[in-house]
Amino acid sequence: MGIRYDNRNKRVNQEEIHEEFMESRDVLRIKHYTTPTIPHLTREKRMRINAIQHIWKTGDSYWKLAYKYYKDQSLWWLIAWYNQKPTEAHVKMGEVIIIPTPLERILRFYYRE
Image 1 (tube, helix red, strand yellow):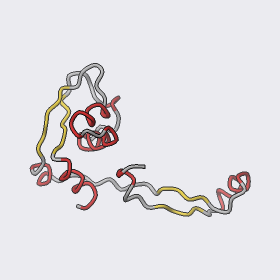
Image 2 (cartoon, helix red, strand yellow; image 1 turned 60 degrees about the vertical axis):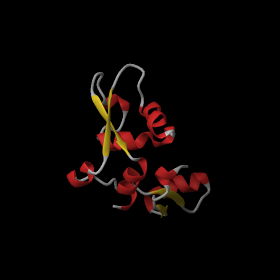
Image 3 (tube, one colour; image 1 turned 180 degrees about the horizontal axis):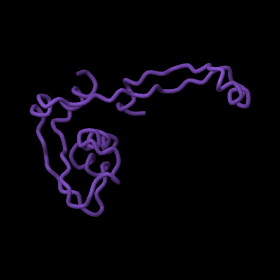
Image 4 (cartoon, one colour; image 1 turned 135 degrees about the vertical axis):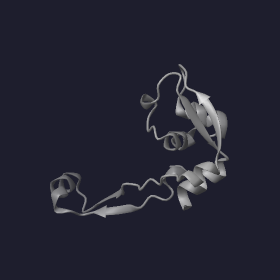
């Protein structure tokens, strides 16, 4: 599924409230991802990241920006996370979006620190 899901925990759900659903599917339990804990960058960490400024315009999308700057459109969520705007609908035309670089450092902040 990509590196975004690498550190996600899975949970086995056998709770009684889901009993009817599980019976209808003929399963004894359901495995699913737990809700992730999303780290927040401190000011100190933000100071250690290079910021490329991009002015949002018609036709822009996170995945296009991720491909342009990271050569991997599946990393669109890094731009959304860094800017604290979970979807493109949260970005207004003319707004400055920050593309965090270098990629290795921003991924290290997200996953390990």
